[in-house]
Structures are given as structure tokens and as C-alpha cells.
Amino acid sequence: MGKVISLVNQKGGVGKTTTSINLSSSLGYLGKKVLLIDLDPQSNSTTGLGLNKGEINKSIYDVITHSADIKEAIIKTKFKNLSVIPSSIYLSGAEIELIQTASQEKNFAPGDQLKLQIESIRDRYDYILIDCPPALGMLTTNALAASDSVLIPVQCEYYSLEGITQLLNTILLTQNKINPKLDIEGVLLTMLDGRTLVGLEVVEDVRKFFKEKVFNTIIPRLVRLVEAPSHGKPIIEYDPKCRGALAYINLAKEVIERDGNEEEGTREGARATV
Image (cartoon, rainbow, N blue to C red):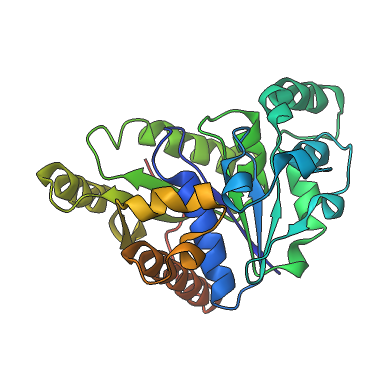
């Protein structure tokens, strides 16, 4: 059965969508069957994989508002082993609809809208990744309720840890109230400029704070990573020999390795702590 991982950080511009696109494509490149769900109203994961928003018939909005079955919204991309459920501008107003649904239906807990749909297709994929919006609202609640774990991108810049405590509190609340099995997959350091002292200090601070939860892989700040989405390609297709492509392949290998450890029962202490 596929593992569901949400990529979450309420702070924008930390490399969340870049990681969603490139981790999912790298997992596919390594032979894993992957579904990427674009839950961000900005639709950057959708366009970053070369999809034309004007040609999309069904989106994740239709899925969570029960206008379509999740299977109808899945689009197979041209990239190896990778499918996507696109986003929609209508997600911007979906928060109110989700709150109304949860309050009106007695047997509907907050977050059930997405979870129940994902459960019906989990066995089709090795990994289901969810690119969450940069906010801790109902869309993110739905993602956390449906997920096995959370991957937190943290930018290697000053103020990078601002808001992380709030995010960890949200994860704890989700564990206690909605999804007791939710784990932290890992913390990913992104956009590192190794020439700056601040970047290196952030790496040290994050590793002290999160300890073994931090991935060994660090994503560098590269122009090629910024360029790739404008061409509708993940970095592994746009420039497979650049440092960014190698970094995301290494990250994908780490994710697979951690899951292997989990299956063997050696991964412990994955619940969030504040």
C-alpha cells in the first residue's frame, strides 16, 4: 500500500513546490510508482510538470468537494512512473466549503474529504505526495489527515525557523485529534548558498533542533532549479547532470531507505515533539 507524504511549511518560498515536483519525479525515476497531488491554489506543481491548466477537466477541487471521483482527476504525465492530480484556482475558496461540509455532516470529521478519496487508490502507488498550500488551514488539515508522514522543507536563510513551532503544534494537534499515526518523514534543508555564513549557521541550527529528523541531503540554491518549472520539466529531465538533479535523486534514495527501515521496525521516535 502506498505511503502518503505531505510537504508542508506555512512559510512561502522555502522550496516546497520545487521539492514536490523533483522528489516525486526522482522517486519515479528510481522505479517507484508515484502520484503527486497539487493542493496549492497557485497550481505551481501542476504547471511545473508541463500541464496546461486550460485543458484540465477535473482537479483536486472537484475531488474534495465530491464533484468527481479521485480516479477521474488523475493525469499520467510524460515523466517516468509519475501521475498528478492538478490544482485549481477554485481551491482559493474551498476552505469555507470544507468547513461547512465538516459542520453539516455528523459523520464527517475535519480532514475526511481528502482522506477517504485517497484510501480508494493507495494500493496503486508506492508514494503519494501532497504539495500543500503555504498556510495551516482546512486544505492542509485535509492533507495531514490523509497522510502517513510530513516532509518539512526549511530554507537555509535567516528567520527560517520562524513559524516551525506553530507547524509542529499543528502536527501534534492533528496527531491527537485526527490522525494519531501521523509521523514526521523528515526535515529538508533547501536553497543553501554555501558561500554565506548565514546559510551554514542555519544548517547547524536546524540539525541541532531536529537532530536525526534532518535529511543528509541538502538542496543547493541553483538557477537551473528555478528555470526547470518554466519549461514544464523536473530537474532530472531539464538538466540531469546538474547538482540539483543529483541532490533530489539522493533525497529520493533517502526517503526510500527510511521507509525500508520503517518496514523493518527500526525507525522510532517519529512523532512530533515541541
